[in-house]
Image 1 (cartoon, rainbow over the protein chains, first blue to last red):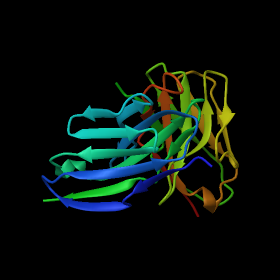
Image 2: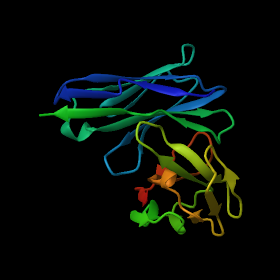
Image 3: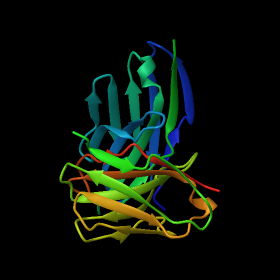
Image 4: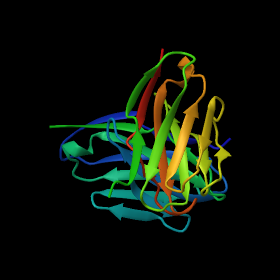
Length: 112
Length: 113
């Protein structure tokens, strides 16, 4: 069964610190992997999209990595800000395109 | 630059009532999707459309119907609401299915009592 798992379930860090969120997947065949940020009460917003051939991709202070061999991805947030408090969702798209498999998300809280 | 707009944002229904959620996008996207988001779970696909006049079932289609009469609109209908349909509903749209960004609406919080 196609699944996406994320860890940790929730994370609390102090402003200015770095953190890394993890995503493991079993989706096959693989097309691309996406990270979304979802603020409370809002819809998800895309951070990065990575295809099979991409190992790393950055979007400002967000850097995503992908290891397609081990089916793992991570999202690293540098110099966290209060506005980074949100849920971060890992999504894996299969090679047929219609199947977006969403992870349950990691809830990040950044405290002053 | 509205993007994806969902109407309404909140709604409370009694069991057995019907309602329609409207999703409108102004980006000329071919693909549109309806998802539900429940606590502790990832978004799950209800129905999707690959173009005007087309619809297809997703992972959890039971109890819902959809229509895509115009390219910019995707309607989600609940004919007889049940408490199990209490959820937050998100609409999304994209140019293609696979490798382009999907844009999400702000969500509709539906409570069925």
